[in-house]
Image (cartoon, rainbow, N blue to C red; front, side, top):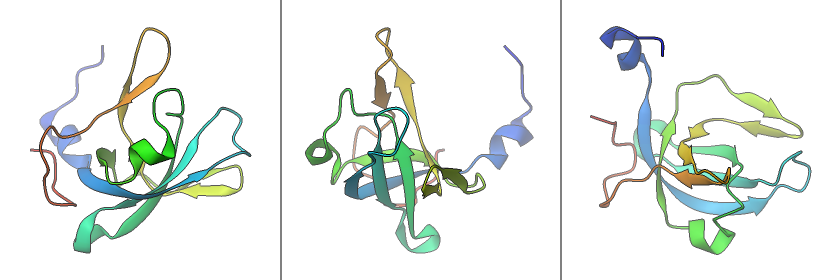
Length: 112
């Protein structure tokens, strides 16, 4: 494991947002959802592709708060432009479990 300095960690903008829309992404190489996430007034609405279809249906996701990196450069994923990275953890079976706050917090709140 590579150690990082505190200053390195401070550069990462981990923010909470609420998923407001979920669209299918049939063009993706691996099954994925297109997420639209509201990060509040300061950051606004961003989109992300997430390979989380093993556990989460579109209905499960709308209204769910998630933790995402909002200061990566935009990334083209096939015909889709991803504007943030929604975070999660791999289970032993390869499925991804989303990183989420355990209580509601304001959209745009930064990880403390």
